[in-house]
Image (cartoon, helix red, strand yellow):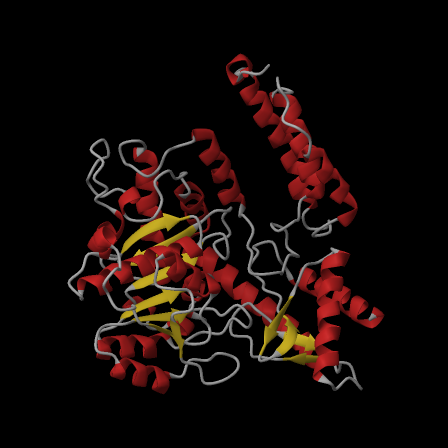
Length: 470
């Protein structure tokens, strides 16, 4: 039993176990709690020493299903509003099973023409969906953080070349610090990318005109004018607390005037481009030098999925290619356009969901979620003990509980922290707290394809019940 070769006949049977569990599990997502804390004790079944001989394929899969279908958090369900987490459309989920079944090594065309062709087509379709020029280079990544790493690595190489240096080959030694400017909406994933690139997480000059973080364009222009060399501007399409946007077109104008690189982090906000009603929010994004987004957010494909687009594909190759390993092909493959070498064929779920639902399907998805966010905001506005803290341009609703007679900031912050904790402890719905303009607030985000008005109304019902208890 200790050698998988002796159990090769069990491969199909094990997959059948998963398939049999899928129907009741998926069928219950709409009604079950987001997290059933009474099942947490099942996690203990994952513990124990590594066995010598193993328990066999079927026993291992049966145990994982028994624990997973009861003790997992239903992040793929319609009532998970914490962070910005999508689900997996039926086509994407099935294609992800196909991805595991085929188990392709997708980085090189040589190892999988299927995966390479699917990635090229998926990237072309995404550029079409977002209104990006077809000539942009692109690569699929595990996340928006890796996508930001990709785009900003290209920015770093571009910046180094303007100083006469090849930083991919020689590093940053002897060069000045690369200037990076942003508004207050810059996300930690961009800072993390800069950290990994040796530029520095805290080396960003933030030009913000208020506590919310809205960009101060005049201050940014003064910073750019004072520099002696090129700079990198980071814009945000979809800020996590409110869903607000930097004015991308204005940032593109600044980048053009001062010869700067414009990187746009569009983790979820880039999907506004899929909607005729909302695409004005990302006006000018097609002028950026690098653009990133997450697939496992609003595209609703399984983890892990992100994508990076770069105006100059040759720059992607100069940033990630030319490995100098003789056994690896030197032509342009996806290993040479991004940070990964071994990569699963994450293009297949993207290809399947775009093929299944098309441009109109995603336009309807984005607009439906915007309507649901407005529906929740209306309920907040009508409630005398709730306070809407920001407009709702997209899919995030930022508000706080403010009952009559509670005026001190510290008391209100504590009350909202306890309300957020109560939501998570209750488990029927999930939404956490944040700090926005110095106050503690709730900020449910609506990006799951399953979510309907009934789910929003249920969230509001649970929130009211818990608030009344407090």
